[in-house]
Amino acid sequence: MSGRLNGKVAIVTGGALGFGEGIVIKFVQEGALVVIVDLHKENGERVLASQPRGTAIFVQGDVSSEQDWEKVRDTTLSRFGKIDIVVNNAGIVNSAISSLELTEKEFDRLCRVNIKSLYFSARVIAPCIQKQSTGGAFINISSMSALRPRPNLVWYAATKGAASAATKGLAAELAQDNIRCNAICPVAGETAMIPLVLGKPDTPENRAKILSGIPLGRFATPADIANAACFLASDEANFITGVELPI
Ligand SMILES: NC(=O)c1ccc[n+]([C@@H]2O[C@H](COP(=O)([O-])OP(=O)(O)OC[C@H]3O[C@@H](n4cnc5c(N)ncnc54)[C@H](O)[C@@H]3O)[C@@H](O)[C@H]2O)c1
Image (cartoon, rainbow, N blue to C red):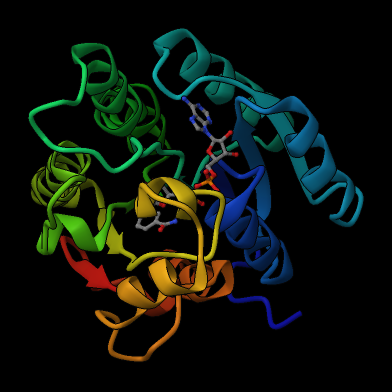
């Protein structure tokens, strides 16, 4: 354990799978106490059980619910006494489809989970960090599609554009409290999202089309995203705020 996050308390949403699971593992390895927040109880408990006893807790919750954010805040404070880091990682993507055909219901669901969650995380958690007067860090998992939108995932990209804009705006607004806000913009990752991003059968040929647009020629792994999140959460990044970091 190298301890780059020693003594810090981190909330990681969507921590039960994919990038979020990688972030939980890395943060615990680096000495943080981690609150795993996820809708999926079984996976949340699985990730919790894989961590050393006492280093993490699991709170089942929906990031698009303000009440659930209040539950996360109250549970974190009563269990660990403070909050230093929030990684807003939970997010959803629609199955790739013409932008003119996405239903209003799907559009609303994308906005609720990918944007409203950030609004609630700021409203509910930032005041606690302000009160602690110790500073803190928000890390929002945006997407490469915020920087470089492609056909068929346009409304998803729009929610990630909003996530990036919110991150930069909050960075400016919360800097006076030494609360840093940064976004990570991953390329396509090797997670459960792949079949949806493809929008067609998950075949080597269809994967190759996506890979041809990724300079390093492979999908992002949870460890890639976790390493970047760890850096941005750590004191090594204590003069970095308002960036969108493409991974
Ligand atoms: N995988 C990719 O290709 C990719 C690329 C760029 C950005 N991203 C972003 O990275 C983040 C993580 O993606 P992933 O690929 O690891 O996803 P994933 O589907 O593998 O895991 C997402 C996790 O979030 C949880 N979750 C979903 N909705 C939730 C809600 N309302 N409340 C609480 N938990 C919820 C799920 O239960 C799941 O455990 C997302 O924000 C996604 O948009 C992913």
